[in-house]
Length: 485
Image (cartoon, rainbow, N blue to C red; front, side):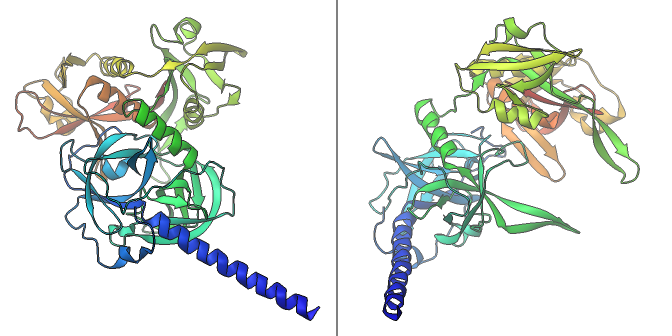
């Protein structure tokens, strides 16, 4: 009995030691597929978008990214025999669209120029293409093909604080399919205890086999008396299955994600009311459930739903939707050319309507932009050749407009250069180079119920950009959360 126990202990020790060696070898291989990303030329607005062996070379000298405006992490994948870098869209979205804007740095600090191949800001995912051919020290990682399990050990690799490249932290998978707040990067996150922080964005979360199970993207904050407190045990990585799908679309669809188009507008109205106890505005539901508020002409939904505006939306493809966030989540899972069922109702009666989704295209986004801007008779789009020009068809003299929109005095033709949210706490603005860009930006902020147009004087290229807030409801006291699909 004693002899068996001794052998058992020896086997246990060997097993543990072997696991440690395997982990070290795995990380040695994984590290050479990780890069640090630096953006060296930026705009004021965002774009709508190997070494094998010992890893010691990564730590021989410091990597200097002090002159980069934006810094993050990334990892290399190989598709069709070609290397690409995957990272978060927010790491590179401010980059200028010109040579020398973005570089990545390999494990031995070699510098390689890259450019944006494509991406998707909603999922906060981007793929970069090498301009400078990658060197032999660079290897690639593969996406995991099996679902991660809660409790599974994982490793986060990246460049925290943009000062400590090739940092590895470990943890376990805490939860799956998490939903996050905000306009972008909302669905399909793995939650883990592998600590990440600023600078880790875009780096890989790998399993014990060295496969990517997710892209490290977000961290969590909890409330405290004087602000927000970082929660180091709550970290989020975009799931591998989503990353894989997005990569395939980007590389086969001219850098863009394939999305379904139904041709409907779904909205939910809230009254903004002052809470006299807290002296803060609170939102009170006017619509208890989402409502079909508009249907696009000549769209897949036109024939089936053109007479159904004002109907409540209860289910999409049999899944109950109780608010706009749930509608968005179900709509994002609809594939182009697939059948879609909508359960709608009015006056106590319900019915199910079937239609076939088509593929979202830029001209539909341009149509959205034009219809939204000109839904207010005060505005008119005057030119869409290259840039987007807008005019104000009537003069305003109210105190609110004079205070916040003083550019309305005098010349009333302006060029739209951005769309997003402008506030005292910071700006979140997307670049507008076309009417379709404007439509995409408006679509981003539909759930906010309003958006800001950033414009400059059309006849004075040196004029200072200014913003105008547009409420989708037409009333600043009513927030109309809206989705266009």
